[in-house]
Image (cartoon, rainbow, N blue to C red; front, side, top):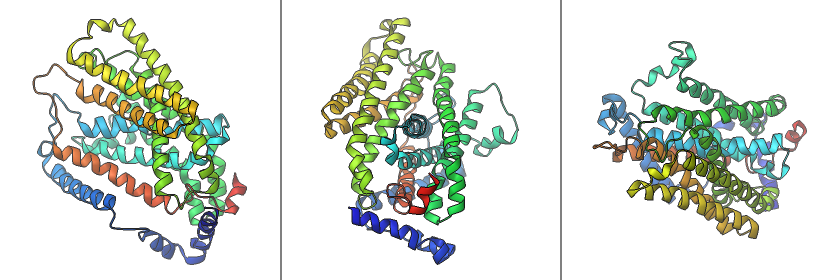
Length: 414
């Protein structure tokens, strides 16, 4: 492992564009690395090609040609799954950067870059998914260019939070790109901005995670009482913490297998300890989340609404997807059992996805006779967005110092 890491470090400097020429360097880096005909590649390419064809029809003939959206159900799976749920799963970026740069928990530094990269790409692609479901996507620039600002709109705040946070995450990750390109002076400048950008990004994260919850406070009569609460902004923020950490654990386990040749020895040695620490933190935050749910349940006397299939479905989410994974994460971290931790992290991630879908789609207008059900084309496009994100993520990790060591000259900037 150490030998492969040293070869990786050498390749970062020997093939730098300052020696080979930027155009030639980039052309070489665009070439595929590794096996091409793998099951994932074949399936994901098929999904992305199908998605591209569906989107051509969508933009040529409108949303009605490929979706089941209507005036009664204007938000579908592209917003509910890719945006509302996806943003919560990207919360690991602001949590990990807070722990490393603000709390100075150096134990978690090896996962900062891959976590920030995952968050950056998630926001970038999920913001793109947002455009797919807008009836007039070209007007998305209105909050930016000053046409119909809408200062009193929650969406106005969220749109600015999204834009600024994407920029902040791009700056947080930019030192890795500078190292890849061998830009020493630019790297020194970007590295010097890191702490300030991190603080700015954390502030934006707390605002837009809770802002998404605040958006649903305006739909009090449209969301089932078991899922509606005046505490939705707080619940969205708290759940984004353990959802993000759960995603970091889940993604870290996969990356260790897929990108084993890119992982530095320090990162490999610290993997288990990082997973245990994150599981302990995620479990504690889930306990806080359950406490808030209990307070909301008692304060709003929700036992009056607790009956039938909706009551059972609520228990599936709260007990099966919050309480159970909380216990798994806490017991797994106590016994340092990575299998239990991964299971708990996976269930926690699924639980937050289910919660966001319940609020935005499933329990939204639960009383309606003709409820929204996504078409197969909506599902394919939703999966296509995720596949495209994974392709870009994999391309970056295989080329830039995300999991591997930084060049020696870059360490002087830290």
